[in-house]
Amino acid sequence: MLREYGGKPLVEWLVWLLGAVIFLVGLVFVAGGAELALLGGSLYYLLCGPVLLASGLCMLMGRLQGALLYLAALAYTWVWSVWEVGFSPIDLLPRAFGPTLLGLPVLFSIPVLRRMAARRAIGGTC
Image 1 (cartoon, rainbow, N blue to C red):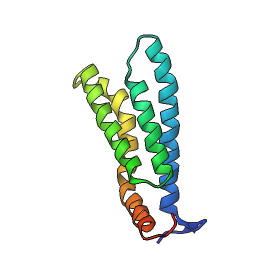
Image 2 (cartoon, helix red, strand yellow):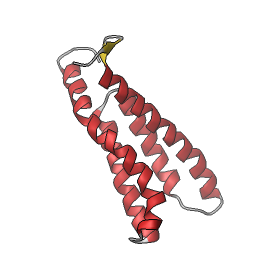
Image 3 (spheres, one colour):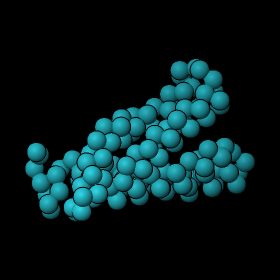
Image 4 (cartoon, helix red, strand yellow):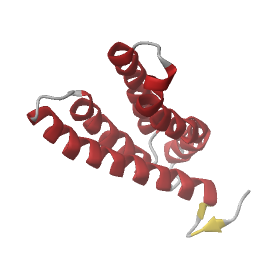
């Protein structure tokens, strides 16, 4: 196993860091999305922000639901992007590239989150 810091393997700390990043992105989405909605813009950011906040919080707590919430938000992002600009790659790039790129470590964190849940289920600490 990789090195441990504070009794946790390094990969669990990396999942915690990923959850913190997603939580911060959610804060930006909520704040910016509210302003954008007040100006008559897209409601996407205002709708997706709370989901990202919940996702980041769940991942900070070591819950698998956080990864699943993020992947659901990613699916919603792709639906919104295609609805807004169609299948034009140059127009999809700024809307979907960042969330998809962040989705890869989320996808890879699922086994770690499952292991953490299994440890919680048998009475261990996380």
